[in-house]
Image 1 (tube, rainbow, N blue to C red):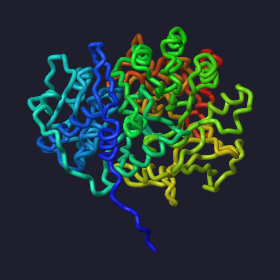
Image 2: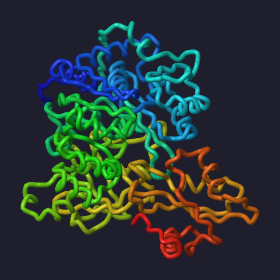
Image 3: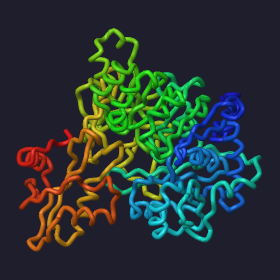
Image 4: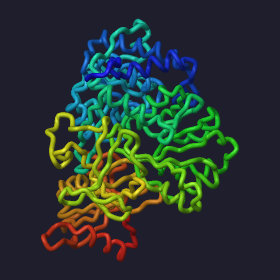
Length: 541
């Protein structure tokens, strides 16, 4: 027997409508390139989103078309997060840190019909434009003389004359609303296609008290770039809760000022950011007293840093784990009632774990034969997940058991333990992706790039510990006898043609021979021992 409940579809417009009707007087703050702080209300946001949706429709953007963004954390980017799904199109945030070569493959595969460009990135976008075929370009904050192409138009001019009422309603909640690319464990970008249903459910789950815990009284700052898995879902979560939103543009150096000026209560970003900002926050402890919670993800945050924030600054740290494939939140680390009597050191050790699955997420660990392993906090297995907001396949990619199990679970590529209370702890990557400042770097991709240089005979890339970035790549290479001087600079320039700057190894160690295993594969464990002994470099451990 079927129940008798309403069944209208979940869609992003409901988040926008709720923000306008219930929280229309709440604010969005954006730090402009000029250094001025621009602010407007959710009601004004709603008005402009409708204009933007009508303007894109008039331009010929249709339902299902991909609309790319090449932007930082700004109010225009937030408008696009709402307007593109509202009209049935698919918002496609581009990672501005990737090289033109990487992005051109992504843009061409996505077949983006329109790209909205933040003028702060005009020069680097101009390089990308040479590699792609996109008819329509809209730009904002563009103070350069670059016009991109004959069809490019300024953002405000684009939306100003458009109607501020938009009537289309998404009827199928499984319609695509966003496309985000992940580097994957093999370094090849793979598209994850979110639906209206998945993002609405993710928003509801993320706003649980023991997850993001955002309320109407909060002022939320996503320090994490909005092009990182939809800004971890924080823009939608904050809007639905009715919290004020603070967007830092692309100025990481003004974060502490913004916290003090706007009264930020909840901020989210990778540990490297919070490690870098810690001294400044300490100096201005009284000015930033509004800040009471950090949401941390992208890579593990050391327990010592968690201790510093909680003990010295009185700021709660909530450790998160997830993946682009998970929209992206999977687990969250908050203490249970039974933990409150534990010594502080034990509490911080728990908080350094990746936490328990949030409501709606299921996790398990399995052995090499796919047999489930016990939750005893000791047994290590491959971490697998599933939820209503987890991908079941990749965009334009045939499903493979390498990524998804036969019974429908996502294979994360992580090795983990789970204790009896459900707290998950990542032990290592099944494949050795290097995590630098919250970004993924593929050692194999860099190795392949090095081997295309005529002077490189062999190459191996490994991750080493780094106080600032968490991990950084180092290359060990065998070079031919006719090598020119300044080999390191030559190889850096060679890699710069294909990879973004942060992918380039910090150091190139020239050796006569790269250690091999018994089956002639590169022995990375032996390399780690070699560089520790001969060059006093610690591995990422």
